[in-house]
Amino acid sequence: MANQSKSHPILCASFNQDNSCFVIGTRDGFKIFDCDTGRLLYERVIGAFVIAEMLYSSNLLAIVGAGEQPSLSPRRLCLFNTTTGTALRELNFLTSILAVRINRKRLNFLNFLVIDFEN
Image: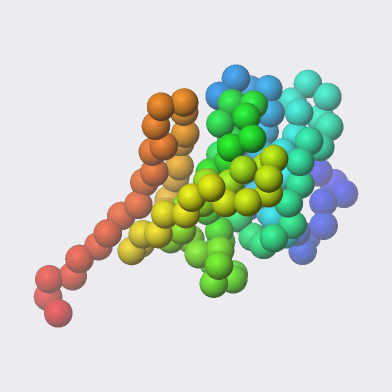
């Protein structure tokens, strides 16, 4: 970590369900690493991500942008296929997505909608 550039900080990091891989989100994109060897398995440079979750050792990621680009909104959840390099599905919400968890049966996300009744 001593060699990490200050202009490209890690915005998020998570392990997959069997702890065989981990994914990090940076200001440049996201990277997937093998936990046993530390080898870089996949890298995509497309913009900043604040949430990146991997489904086991599959090619499916759930990613949420940091909002630095209109296409990478923190209110948009993208299911991304690393094999084809394309989005399988995008879900848009009214508020920012705060957390995502994924398993073989479900995709769970957390966001809050605040309603101001005084105005």
